[in-house]
Image 1 (cartoon, chains in turn blue, green):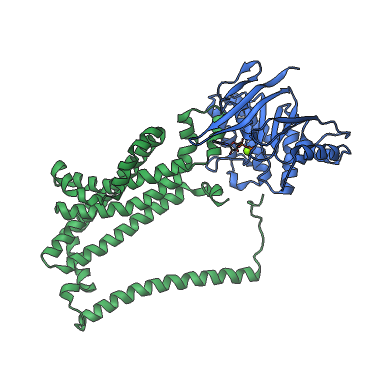
Image 2: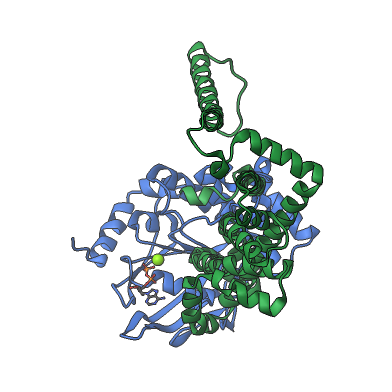
Length: 255
Length: 279
Ligand SMILES: Nc1ncnc2c1ncn2[C@@H]1O[C@H](COP(=O)(O)OP(=O)(O)O)[C@@H](O)[C@H]1O
Ligand SMILES: [Mg+2]
C-alpha cells in the first residue's frame, strides 16, 4: 500500500496589489490508497486552496504535490473534484452531465459510456438519465455529481464541503450515500469541511488545520468501535464524543 | 418523483378555482379588444362630427381605404417586406457580430481592458449620427440602412454578452478545469451555454433597436420601405398614408417581437436554463 498523494512542505501565497496573503503554510500530508482523510479547519483557513493545489488548479509557492509518484504541475484527470454545490449543468440531461469529464478528456466512447450508464443504473438513477437536473431532488443531484466525478476513474477524490449546501437532514443522508458509493468503488478520498462531526463520521484520519495561514495543527487516527462503519453508525460510537471534544479544543473557536 | 403527475380526480373546489382563472383570462382579453375598438370608433366618430380635423389626424375609414389602395397597387407588401427584411438582417447581424466581438474580448483580457474606454464612448454615442457617413461611404441603399441598424445594436450587444460571459459561476469553470479543460473547452462547455439566456435577451432588445435604425435609415435614404412612406406622406401632407404606415409598422414590430419570444420559449423548453437562476 503506497501513498496515492504526497504533499511535501507545501506553501502558497495569493498576491494582490496591496498585499500578499499566505493561504497555506508548510503542509505535509500523505494519503494512502483506499484511505478516507478529512481536513477540518475554520472558514478561510485555506482548505479550498489546499485542494486546488492537490488538483493542480493552483501552483504552490513552495513545496510540491506528488500523485502516484509524479509531481503535479497542472490539472490532471487523476483527481476527481466535488464542489460545494453539485453544479450539474441545467442545459444538459443527467447522462450528458455525467459524461462531461469524458468529453473533455476525449475519452467518451461506447465502452466508457457503458460503464457510466452502469454506474447510473447501480445507484438508482437509471430512470433519470434523460431528465434535466431541475427534475431531481438535492440528494439525487449530489449522487449524479459524484458519478460525474467517478466517470473519469480518478485515483483520488477531493470533496470540498461537498454537503454543506444541503439542509441538515438531507446532508446526513447524502453523506451516508456518498460514503457508501466511495467505499464500494474503492476510492481514496480527501474531504474538506468545517463541520467537526462530519469530518469524524466519515474519516479514517482527521487533519486539523490552524487559522490562516493554514498549517497542520494535529492529526487523529479515528478508531471507532462499531461493527458496520458508516457515517451514521460512527456518530453512535462511544469514542465519537472524545474525538469531537479534542478537535473542538484544537480549533479553539471564539465567538 | 414529484415530477410525475399521478392521475387524480379534480375536486370541486379545484374546478371552481380553474373556472375563476379562466373567467379572469376572458375578462382581460375582452377588455383589451374593447379598448382597441373604442379607440378606433371614437376616432372615426370625432372625425365624422368634425371635432377633429381628419386632414391632419386621418380617420380609420380612410386608413382602411389607403390599405386597400396600397394593396391593389402592390406596394403594401413591397414596402413592408423591404423594412422587415432590413430589420431582421440588421438585428441578426447586430447580435452575431456583437456576440463574436464579445467572445474575442472574453478570450483576451488584455484586449478587453485596452478597448474598454472606446467601448464606453461608442456606447454613449447616438449611433444614428453616423447614418449620413454610411450613406456617403456605402451609398444610399439597403446596405447603408442595414449598417445603421447593425451599428445601433452592436455595441449594446458586446457589453451585455461580455458581462454575461464574465458573470458565469466561477465554480462551474473550476469544475471543468478539474477535468483538464483548456480555454476553448471552458468556453464551449460552460461559458457559452450559460450565457444563452443573455444572448436571447439581447436579441429581444436588439430587435427594437434595429427597428429604430432601419426607420431612421429609410428616412435618410428615402427610396423604399415603411420609413420612406412615412417621410413621403409627411412631405406631401398625406396624413392618411402616414397613419396607415405607422399602424402597419406597429403590427409588424409586435409580430416580430412575438416571434423572438416564441424562439426563446422553444430554446428554453423543458425548464432548462431556469433551475440555477431560481435557486
Ligand atoms: N483568489 C484569491 N485571491 C486572494 N486571496 C484569496 C483568493 N482565494 C482565497 N483567498 C484567501 O485565502 C484564504 C483561504 O481561502 P480558502 O482556501 O478559500 O479558505 P477555506 O476554503 O478554508 O474557507 C482566505 O482568507 C481567502 O480570503
Ligand atoms: Mg472553501
